[in-house]
Image 1 (cartoon, rainbow, N blue to C red):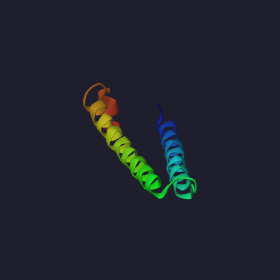
Image 2: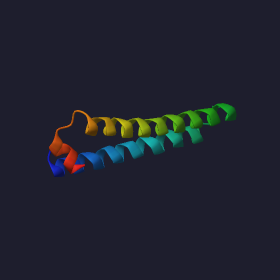
Image 3: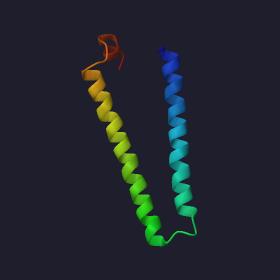
Image 4: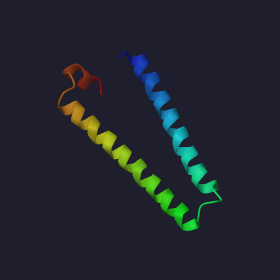
Length: 77
């Protein structure tokens, strides 16, 4: 993947991830049919999985860069 294509890919993934993050939390906060206790639990669960996703992707990147990525890909990171 070229530099510019990688840059555009990162921007689009960041924008889509941010839009999903904001919309999920907005839907949880604005849902009037949900009990307050359930809303709080849902927000905590979503926050937990967002954090786990970030940690998992970071660990996978470390695994890739130290095992099966070619040497020239390691130098560009």
